[in-house]
Length: 324
Image (cartoon, rainbow, N blue to C red; front, side, top):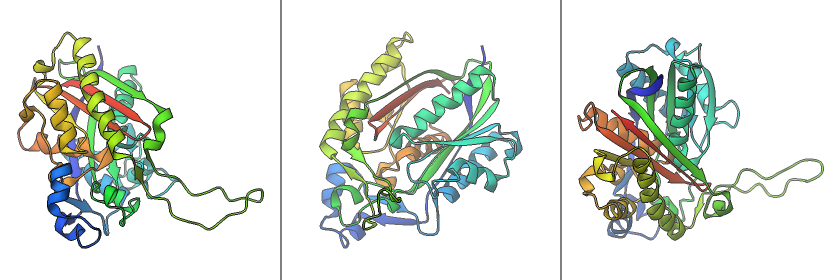
């Protein structure tokens, strides 16, 4: 049966790295306060880089590993909530940069769950036979959406991009199962408003910028409950137990969330690789950046079972079970 598997990964992080000590000169905080509560010590912040340029760089790295030229890509799917343009979409702009003239392109916005939603969409296109090679990208310039006077949010987020090339496969590796869900009734827990309506029937008021807002405690409680729930569902319906999974690549939001998930699943933290100490929360980019790091440092071996799991604004959540 035709299914999809990852044949190449790539990532990109902006040149500038902002540590907690520098942040303490902007808002009332300290390195100790941030590290103790989040596990984050620094994060990369875009200056000359953009959502499109970062996504393009990550995509090029993934294509190089996959040994595919851009013209072999049938579909480009970008996950982001911080696009450079509302229109054209980010995937189309990356297509132009890559010269992937044979691909069709669109974006997905599911915040921090975006890359998981994009993987599931790509897998469905491959499984149906509509596509052979799909480029999936998570890219975010969250620094443009952060209120740098609000210490409850500006300490958490970073910029960056990650990508994966999925290809049709008939061997025993690849994606096994997916799980996803949403709860729009709780959308106000994590939100970022667009520009206000302005037209002849509704004259424009003062044009004020909207910044990302988050109820941190509610997000924490939601994530700590939802991650083990997804893991148990995915493993259970595929005849596995959590101990049968070699690596858990979770959305990199907060070290305490990941530690709590490991504890609830009665698993060692060593199975939960992390890079949030140097990257912060990069939303849709966090899982593909971590996946690329693990892939390139030799952590992943053929036959390993992986669960990728994300959660974020919407509220949304998603997980994927695969054999490497």
